[in-house]
Image (cartoon, rainbow, N blue to C red):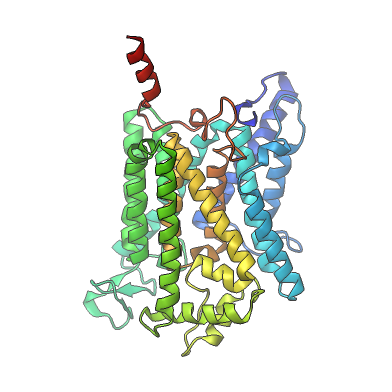
Length: 458
């Protein structure tokens, strides 16, 4: 299978050096995407036409994956196959139809194509270079350190960010809040909620860096950086961020112990059913509460207006236009950037077909991460923690509206989906996740069936 392919070491001299360089290019591009998502060091202005620096690098990275070079294995079409192919195709086709049939601007569509390119770059990289999981952990560590250090600096130096809260986590004006006002850190982002979403999404991957080193003092340093990141999450004073971060920690702590006990298929179906009921119930609660006036404040207004707009526009209002349309339809003079809910935002912009596609992406990705975690894959475990926390935040916000967060979200999806086979049907000798390529949690498996066989033989 493609998962077991390793780089060829044939040849020497210039051809071998060139092969190593080409093999390095996709990892370098992935590193640029991750670090740019954390620090925004690349300009957003295009170099020429619609080609931005990140898009140019993505094309180079994808070409480097598939170009035949003697002395190294190249990615083939089957290496890019994932369980999200159909939902992603449906998402792209829906966005394409909404954009061109509705005569909408094409810039948001290009942004969607860019993040999908990030997804397949990571999938191809992980499939052809399984050992790259170590680099991913170190890059996540660097991103968390950069954003977290800036956040702490803003708080300790009392640097005005324009966002303040009182001790009860109530928004106040920084100018009139007085001595009781607490500065909300924004780090390398525009507002504290975006910083919280970034940390919720990336902090679990610091565990990859921890398990990639064997030396105790190095692991201690990595743990300290992780603690810095969770401390930075506290400085955002984001209530949704607190809940999402705690959920991620609970998943990290419980995935190893709970998932292996769900060996019975009926138990897994029950758990999946409960999860779907909770998801549907949460969606229904949002629909009901949003009809109750201002009971949820700004979010209630946004949801109420979004549902009315979605009912009047079954084909969607176009990518990137939800904020302007909701602002025009909501009561008062409040300006909205999005619908304050990931799935509701897709419903407003692309209609029911787009909603179905993004729901499919959500469910398939989470189930795949859960299966990988059950197989004790460290990528699956940290991916499950990251996606669980991020999806919880997306119930009350839409941080993926920012391109940098959206890119990191699709990179996370790529890491998770590359860890599991492209289809749902198990093949002979295969497992749901190849933990041998992404490390394990440092705990021995429980060979229950072997123990039963030994007991019977005695």
